[in-house]
Length: 236
Image 1 (cartoon, helix red, strand yellow):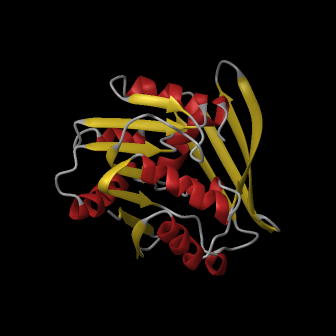
Image 2 (cartoon, rainbow, N blue to C red):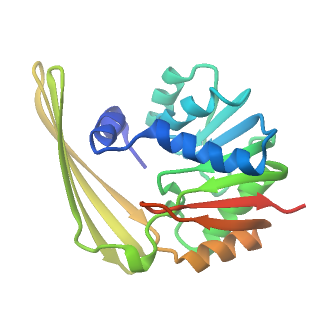
Image 3 (cartoon, rainbow, N blue to C red):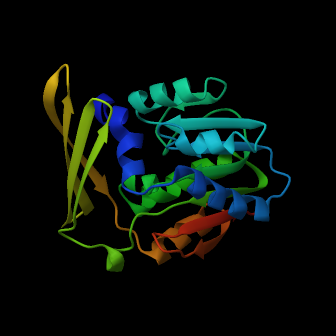
């Protein structure tokens, strides 16, 4: 889960690393609307700072977001004051309403700790979908595509602030571990350092597909240059 300090530089760093939230959101919309053309409501699970949700809000009459991080939701709320935002865990949230589309992007689904929790989260998505509703989920790397020891390093300058981020990925018994260190230098306050650790489960494609099926979805995996996307259509 992202804390306040990391949330403040989240969009800046990821855009500098080449992440295009707008193009990603448009690709997700194409998949979702291709399966549910008349959809007019969307829930973004693990919505973060609302960068994808802002794009979704241009297409749907009703958009909402769920995230475990209060710091991320505070930024999303400033960006999307009209959206319904809820702090909750993707494994057991309950909003008391249904949506035509549910998204869960940027490999956030891999924060669940087992295939049982993966199925639990997807069953929660199913409970919040209208009949025939669509979910689009971006996985973490499949085990055979994960690179232990991978190091990423970036430096971004914006105004009077310079931010550096260095991460190291490793394989652990429970899946994978991402250790991230940040340095933020500002003209008025000097240099500060903080670190975060993220644990991601390494589910196989077959494990994802089995969990979707057990949760009541007809699932399709759509490969691309990155990690690909799973698209599930709720049966019945």
